[in-house]
Image (tube, rainbow, N blue to C red):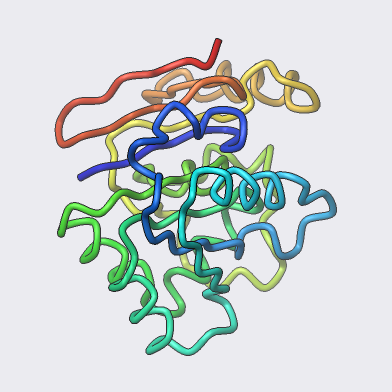
Length: 200
């Protein structure tokens, strides 16, 4: 399985530019839909364009499953923006896109997860509730993540405005295999191997 997980894609995406250049990208902004600030979505769009990617944007919370399926099947790269992790996992599960994603990743496609898009890859996303408010209409019975990785990404580590909350999560969830990353770092996962890379 190939994953690139980060806090802020437009700051670090160029580290994997050879994986993106002239590739077809399924761009999923769903996590950001209820957020106040969404500047990172526009920044990501700009970087993909600069790298010559062919981007198809699709919101999994409103689009028909058949459309999502055809976009995912056609893509080389599947990218999830940041936003609310609980809203994103809820929509993935409700629509069956979680299983579709796993199927496409099994074919060797690259998933890029930014912030919420990285958090959802963990076995559970309960640890992030202090950073991401659970929506009132959250419909899942538990806080299970996609379980694509065996650790827990903590994005925006010691980065404003998340400095205090990330420190608190590190302290309170010391029993979890947390992987804190700041906005200039990304985690590259290829099969069993994973490493943190940094943008100078």
